Amino acid sequence: MNKPVSFGKNSTEVIKVKEKINQLFKDKLFLVMLVLGLLTIVAAAGVVTIQRGTVPDEENPYMQLQDSGALIAEEESGSQERIQTEGPANATKIEPVLPAGDTEKVKAVPETKAVIEQETEEEAEAVGTGAVEVVPLVLNFTDADKMIWPVMGNVLLDYSMDSTIYFPTLAQYQVNPGLVIQAEVSQPVAAPANARVMALGTNEELGNYVQLDLGNDYVVTCGQLKEIQAVEDEYLEVGQILGYVAEPTKYYSIEGSNVYFQLSHEGIPVDPLDYLE
Image 1: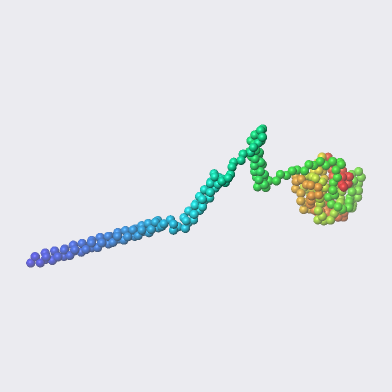
Image 2: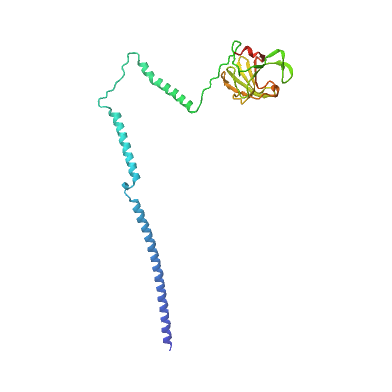
């Protein structure tokens, strides 16, 4: 009675062992297939890389252009070398024939050339930097010199330091250290002589004014101006525009638009009419 039971247990165990073996075989087969797949991918990538790296040089257009340029450069350099070394077939070296005692002149030629080249370089540097040498005017105004009129017009109020004259706007008599010259508004005002601009200023009586140094302690003051063109320390040539005639200040409302013109020597006003042409 015990034998059939033992036989059944052995059959069951055999089946389980077979199933385990089959499962193990399947797992190993899967691993093998996975490894083979990875190896196939790696091999394919290697083949593509090798094929890219083995493209012939002549198929690359850039390499062809570079090689052609190199060949042309080599041919040109070779031609120049042949010309320099060989020269014309009939060329002969000619040496200057100098009389005795001129050897020093020949030696001085390279030095002269170097000096000329250095001067040329210095001039080029000056032009490149925009540097312009400004030569100041020589100011040497004297009693014998003459000035031009800053504007052409009638004298409304004359110079008078020895006696008083009547000022219509002020309705009073007083001395006048300069000239009041009639002018139109916006009329240009010229520098009466070569001068350096000493100062620019403004006050109630003269409005905007310019002081000019003529040299030898002669100073000109031009007032009643607008749109002044000059700047301090600038050198002006005779006739150069200082500015333009402005509307008169309240001190000259009745006289009308004008240019105030004063000349001083060593700080003392002098009659401008004695120096105007």
